[in-house]
Length: 182
Length: 167
Image: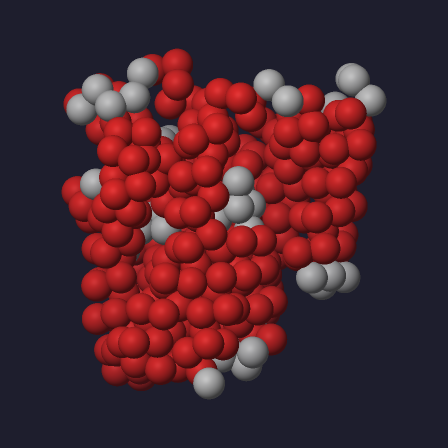
């Protein structure tokens, strides 16, 4: 039944993702496309939506996928699924916070996780880049926007939401307003 | 808690400064030194950082009930908004202006992720071990599409063995 599948899949996502946010993109992509629930392009859209709205990406994802596959109840089930590991583990960690920290084994594991998280985020960049730039032939305009944004943000501090908003405006200009003029 | 969920956009790392301000400066729930540790733990744990952090703080303050209420507070605003948005998503998609805007947003999202990857690499990769883990991890996940679970568990084991040698 879809509800169990939703709960279980997102529970796995909640349990096996580290580093939060973008680092979760690869695994979420694997699970969600593996189930045939969304395409990679649609996941990129969910990421775009998640950037524009409050809250963590994983929560947004679970709500969105759950909603699409099984309405509001599906959204609730998926979201509870993804949150449960976090909530349980966090309360455990809170209880044993101070005794855990010093253990060499824990530090060892964390020392491997930090570089891995960087790698996962890089993998997310590849996935999103692929679908943004190469899904309908080569979208040079998108590549251009990304490059310009990279240069600008490395010089000037731009709030992510502002950047997204600018992206939306530029997108409208570049793709909807300018082409008919030529 | 509800406020934090409602007023933080962009997810994950964007929430950190806001949580810091709220938890430490405004409400005095957590001490300055501790908040960094809590973030570090929340980051190394599975799951969503914001959720981990707020549940953690909620639990410390008010036991299991505190933890649960904090968790719900962070989740609820997102849940409501995305539920609404996803129901209209299909409507959105067919409008050419909206589709155009989305592509622009996607390009900027790509920028944000690239920057995040760069910053994380700078912060997290400090020695040869880090480089090796990151490189292998990247190849496995990005190029070979290996199931991320195995990569994470593998990294955990490697880290455990490496750390256990008393570096």
